[in-house]
Structure formats: C-alpha cells, structure tokens
Image (cartoon, rainbow, N blue to C red; front, side, top):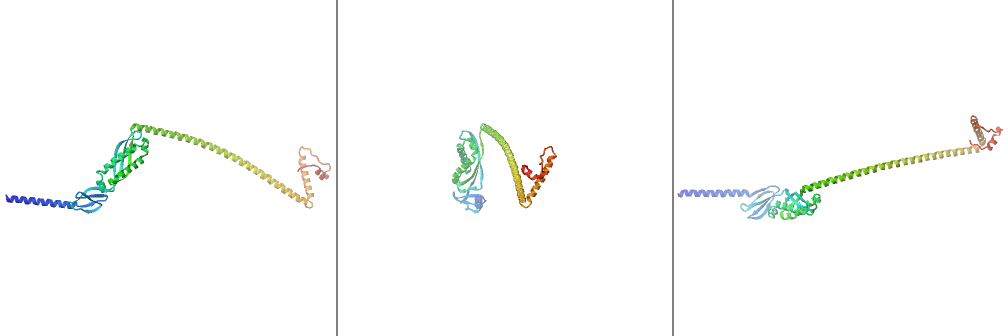
Length: 310
C-alpha cells in the first residue's frame, strides 16, 4: 500500500507541474500582442488602467497585465431605428436615420460609458424628437439639414466624455400618416396645375406682346422706309435743280463772255435769228397761225419789239 500511495502522489505532482507549465506557456504567449492598424488595446495592470496599445508588436507582463478592451478606430455606421415624433402642428411622423461616428479616445470610450453606440442612438432619437417638435410638418421636410446639424452638435458635446466624434447624422425617412400623405399629394398636384396654368397664361401673354411688337416694328420700318424714300427723292430733285442751275449759270457766263468779245453780239443775234426761223418752220407745219413781220430784213428791230422766249 505504501508504494501505491507513493506512485499516486508522484503522478499528482507531475500533473500539477505540467498544468502549471502549460498555464505559464499560455500566459507567456498571451502576453505577446500584435495590434492591427486602426485598432487600440486597453491594458489593465492588476485591474487598473495602465496604457493604450497602438498598432504594432507589444509585450505584456504575464499574470499582471491583461487586455481589458479592444476598440475599433475606423468610422462606423449605426442605424437609428424608426421612432414616432410629433411636429409643432401635432402631426405624428415616423423618423429614422443613420449616425456616422468614430472612436478618437479609446480609453474614454472604454471607461466613460457602458456602450457608446447605444448611448449615441438614444441621444440622437431624443434630440430628433425635440427638434421636430419645434417645426411645422411642412418645414420638417425642408429643414433636414438643420435637424442633422443640431443632432451632430448635441452628440459631439456628449461625445467629448464618451471618447467619440460624430461626423454626420443623416435622416433617412420622414413618414407622415397616410391621410396626411394623401392631402400633401393633392396639395402638390394643385400647385402643379396652378403653375401650369400660370405658365400657359404667361406664354400667351408673351406671344401676344411679341406679335404686337412685330407689327409695331414692321410699321416703324415701313414708315422709316417711306420717309427715307421721300428724303432721297427730295435730295435727288434738289440735286437736279442745283445741277440745272449750275449749268444755266455756266451757260449764261459763257454767253456773256462770248458777247464781250469783238463780233460776239453779231454772232449771238445771228444765232437767235437762226433759232427763230427754225421755230417758225416748225409752227408753220401745224395748224397754228403765225404772225410774220412785214419786213423780214428788219428782223432785229421786230425781235426787240416782241417779247419771245426761245
């Protein structure tokens, strides 16, 4: 019996030391940490926060240091479930959205709040309800940017103590009751019809204005054309008269020059006599009675006594 008891004791001791060695080996390997990019490991030493490990290789003290939290530093998307909200005019609408946030202080995110994702969703819902309660139903569809900016502002104020930063908050849907939707659709259709009628009337008005402007411009152009025509005709006639006057003055000047030279007066009288005789011959061919001087040799005296124009 003594030998048997001794063998059992040795076996228990061997099992104990083997288990202890195995635990030491496991703890040793657990003390070696490779932190990936965009991850942060929160280390506690004997239950107290010690440090935050960034990306890379790290060695911990076995049995003393442990990884308490692992935080993901990448931007994450959190859905905000649909919730009932009442607008300023007491219309019930269902609103949902999405939050885009990231951890900027891993230690604060680990110890500042139990679950920062849940806390951010709850705060976003309460803030959205309070903001929509200050807006009328029509403005809730127009002021999405305002609602989003207000929610982001409130979340970032709280996020300073949670170790997070909210980048964006987007409202996905604002759904009023079906009765309100039908009324809004009728209102939109009525507005579209009004705008169509207004556009058509404005088009008809502009068309008539353009037509009358065209007629007016046509009449103006026609009258200006007539005026220019009369001006051109008057200028032509004036130029013609001026040309004739210049020619007459030039001929008179030449005649006076011819009369001033010796023998010029006799030549002029001879020319007048010749024209007189030619004119008399033309008159004689017709049925017009012609008075001929009795003494044709005294033609010059008769010519002076009779006022004739050639």
